[in-house]
Length: 131
Image (cartoon, rainbow, N blue to C red; front, top):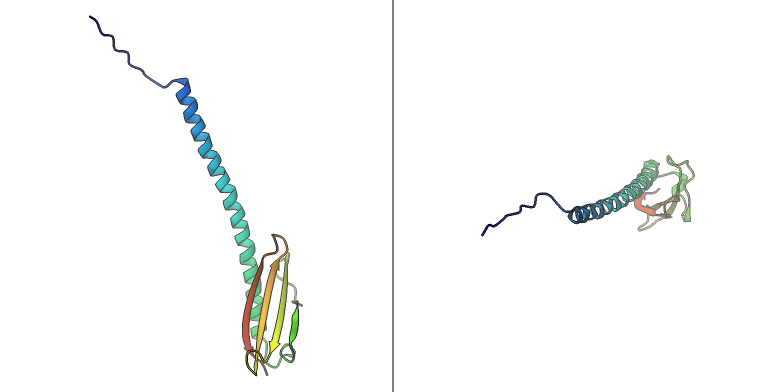
């Protein structure tokens, strides 16, 4: 009795198609994650700009003299920041509460809103010695 051994060399067409399908599904998942990462990066950039603007306004107010007219009476409710913002597309509001939390101090609140991407708002609150 003669036994013939047949060696299969290579892949069948179905095996190749299954492998390509699995590879394509993996690539589509990676493409979806890339889109999400790009959107997240853009949002982070807008929030970072809003934080920088808010910090800049707080520093501007902190640098003013304690006898500045801004600290004479309360600015409430919040009003729009009167000076031009460095980056377009944002709105900055500030309020000053004189003699808060104690006499001789002023509590300053600043909020910057992003008008372009969903209206995210960043807020900063600080205290400064007034007159």
